[in-house]
Image (cartoon, rainbow, N blue to C red):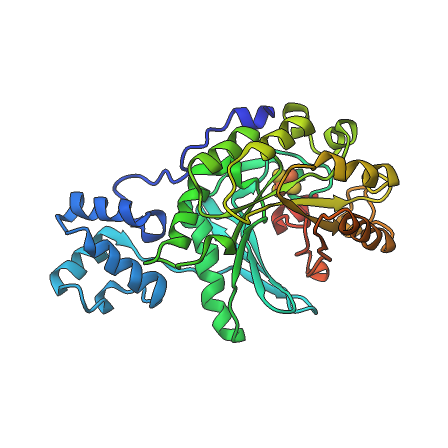
Length: 367
Ligand code: SF4
């Protein structure tokens, strides 16, 4: 395991002192019910009511939760932090993509991106401040890991963007954990956030609308399926030989390609479900004809589709975008072999919101 990774536990990062009011965002519905019962002697259905007001009606003032008795509403206001979800900054790309900067505990900052696509908006959220995995083509990787985000800090991004979307008369239909950080390294907080996003009393998103993207932390991938996390999985492959993949993604030394892909072959997928294999294309590094030759053989037997992601060469990390013809050629060749392949051209490059470009301003200035 990466040294930094091994030093950091995956326990919840929410370490608020017990005397502080805890954010509603930090609780699953079952946890909130237990907290209300222990602290105030309230019945579990109060948690259902609070969730509906909060996530579905977008009412954040307990005094307005009119199906709860007045005395209980006052107690709730004293017990829980119903919060504000303001962002610190917002930039809008010429392609309509919006990048948000959120300030979280201890004055730290993370970024979220609302990606405009022809038929939908996708919200990309961060799961950590920085990242321990150090992929060589990724700006976030240059920050190192500062800490995991708590569940409430992940959901603050979702709620903040959801409220701001009203100003643009749009909303997101999908959420992807592809912002700053490796989400499966912060397993507990990310999966608690997913349980709230998919809770029928919460945001009630379908599991198909949520994607968790990992570089391939094999034990966490197994746990993801064992615990039946209500999201789909995307895995960044980004190489067809261990030499190249280890060079650009140090995690490959711990979990080489064969171990990773054998794991993906063995996980229980539902009917018609697939894993997305992401492939960031780096000119002359992993986009060679030999790579294209090897890729279909490597992934044989995995119910998957391949998402080709031409790299943004303005990230300043010494890699270049592929020749624009190459992703199209790969897509055609993979399709001919019966493999569904899509190309994801980057959005929001002019505001540094594209894939691999997320790094907070304070870090950017230091660099
Ligand atoms: S690509 Fe993902 S896992 Fe790798 S350094 Fe960047 S944020 Fe971390």
